[in-house]
Length: 134
Image 1: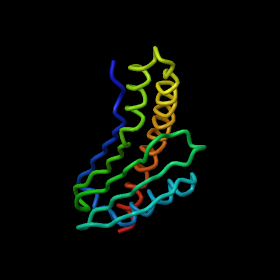
Image 2: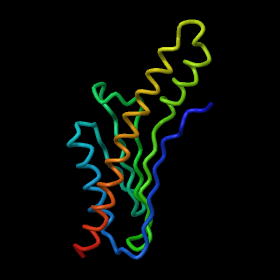
Image 3: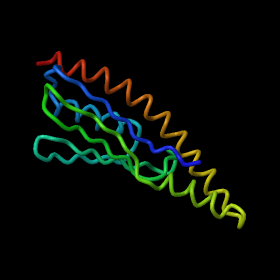
């Protein structure tokens, strides 16, 4: 059994959305939850790097990409492989007492699933909002 890869991808067409404004909203979403957040703009696209703090219970960084044109774009949220690796190592070396790694990995995965659900609803609403602002 393999650990689930946490990747969320949402695509929109024909929205004429302000991607810069959408990226600002995404930045604020994570900042309000007290994550450490940075945004890098490249070729009209945005890379948002989200670093959880210990109290979030999420292991590894989260990467959010906002890519495309205002009329055809994608928002993708992925996590580094740390959670997946801990689950794998915990199972592999569980007989040596390292099963706690798998438990820690599963807890992180659950927290990330909760965050993904909230993020998906948030972004869906904000896409509608930034397409109406123009």
